[in-house]
Length: 220
Image (cartoon, rainbow, N blue to C red; front, side):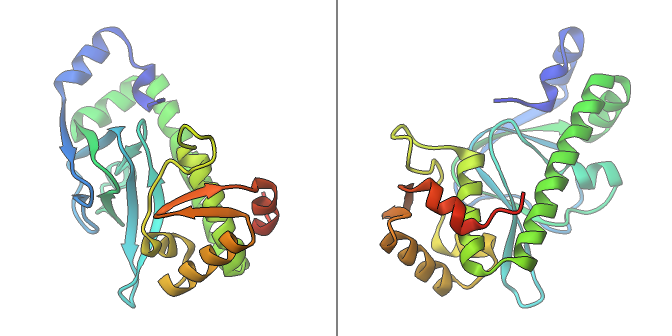
């Protein structure tokens, strides 16, 4: 697990530990809410989290998926803005919160930390831009295949080397892909019938990754 704070050492690391508080969140629990004011930087120790926003029609759109080692809420913190999305635990999570003023002071003092934060922002922006292109230029079948590949890239596999190490509801998959729950269920069933994936309850097993990649019509 890699964190932006892995570049901090010695006295600064000890000082950091004095300015953070850690807590656990149960599956489905809200970590922070859209339009809330940031009080600190959220650092994920373990677990999986979704960042989502609600559109004018009331439908949720999942913007990003997060895992252990990631940071949350940095955009609002750095821009002195409100949160543009909500963070909800997809499973039981352990999260630390670093005091806002201390984090900003540390980022200005520690060149390595500042560079690590810039890299993290750049990576997240790149993934966001790719997701926008996918939503605007790909059909829903291509987007579903790409989403499954994204889940694999983000969370990896279970011990069998085929089953995705994340369990999402059909509605959550639909919210990430940008389609209706009914369409998501239909497409997953089609992929299952085409022997691209195998559905085991809510779990998804990739059985033909080459065919999945071809279906996704990757643009990058």
